[in-house]
Length: 239
Image (cartoon, rainbow, N blue to C red; front, top):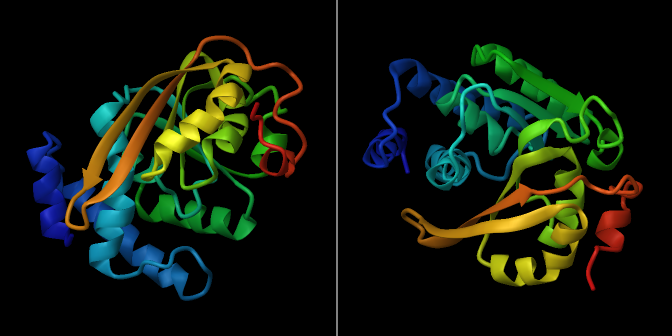
């Protein structure tokens, strides 16, 4: 998917990009490739791959979830900024926060935000498990996103503690989402969430299966969660 097809496909979905937004995506691609030469940000560096498998793939969340102006969004383990920064470009009135465990990536994100002239973006170097114990961030977000971070049984423990009651957790997953949701059902309930929707879609051109999983936070997460760093991955909350 080259840049022109990216713009055309989004227009067909009812999303018309301004010249400034088109420039932001182009500059995002350029900065990503520049920085990827000195640090490992992505295995995908061809323009067609970045536009399809990073930019468009990230934006698919907005086809099924309504992002609203002023929402406070946290992206857990965003790496090079996916999915939250492509979503931020589309919806500039979102307040976007990213937490990532690698400080080098935070350096990249700070540089990228300046290059793209993004406002109301904040980056934090921390593990999700320890960051969620901070009262300034625990249960403070309207929406939390994650893409390609961990299985749902693990991911729910890393993300749901940040979602305020009444807010949403939006996970971008691949073809194995049904199996993951079956395994993650106990974790989602334990952490105060309720599955609202599992929306399936096909990524254009390569016809690969994607899922947007939307979980509503119905009650507070028990204080003991998340457990200490590494534990959710080693001992997922499964029955």
